[in-house]
Image (cartoon, rainbow, N blue to C red):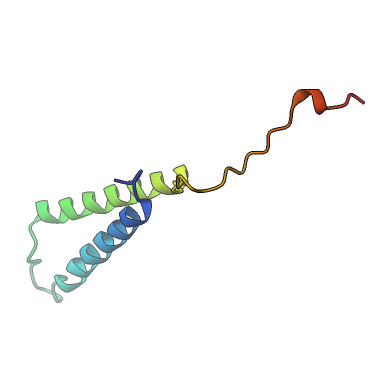
Length: 86
């Protein structure tokens, strides 16, 4: 997915983080009340946040930039014979 369009993956990760954060905020119990989420659900949410963060880190480290077929090549070739010795 990320190789085809990294921007879609980045937007998906941001949205997933936002939705999970909103779920956590909206289910925080009032003082003295029991949390409506089970311990396993809370741990699953934490694991999801960790996975999202790990993937975001991978994407930022790899600097995935889409390359299009019709994009000009920025490489300038210099023949070795044209290099003068000093």
